[in-house]
Image (cartoon, rainbow, N blue to C red; front, side, top):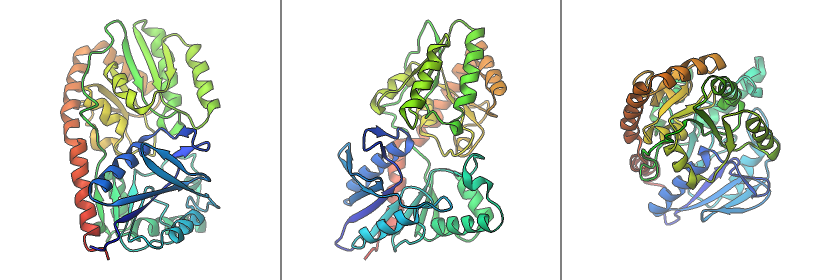
Length: 372
């Protein structure tokens, strides 16, 4: 092993608005915990993100690099700045699939948090002809040029195997995790049946369908409360969400820092994860399952690695009508909610933080064991 134990880590957007706004998604928690693994293994991680300024979060210094010009979903300017800035590093980790283009060094790792091009509103979803081919060429390089691809879900790996076979030995599956010391069962609200949406206020996360379903369900059932807990990308989206919730009886909107979320999960009865696209093995889903809650999930991405419909949760199409049908069935059948929650808890135990750390430690040792 070489004497240089530094690891260069490149992220997209950890902090927004000059450090005043955390992006508040699973990627934040992932980076924080991965940083801890690196330190525990004796490495010295250095983190960069696409930003004009440098920030610190939970003891992690996050240095800024300008975004530069984006092309075909890639950030080649950002990539090349990172490449030059880290010329003395023996090891690197890219926290998102398109970040390794156009240059990577030896001993590099890229992480896929799920297929991100399955949402029709994203510009690369509608590309065709030579533009589509160029986008695919860049994606192929970004996912195969590093020494190891770590995927949080099998959906991505199955797509890659079918599309570009032959790279399987440089790919590994490390599903997401839940810290069962923080997320565990608790007593829900005895007076209200609480349905929790613990997600970003984003169309790909099914926010519009969830709001429409909440309006219908709250009109039909006076004992139901919907809690929408998550951030938008800016103040105006959050203000709009607050105004909507205020105008609808039984609906609540707020957001909380990460360390306060376990208590919110414990007070819920049903947890709604209505993702329509761009999803891996959702941290929110695992946290709900670790709390013994009934989860209602979109049938997309890595959610199908976690949930077996009717066994440990419910999988559904994400339409207003489908969500209402599933939720109404669960409201009327408390015994089924209890059974699904018990099975969800058993499932979550297989995705513990300790298991996740062991898998990552093994993967890094394999790819960096002889780094020189």
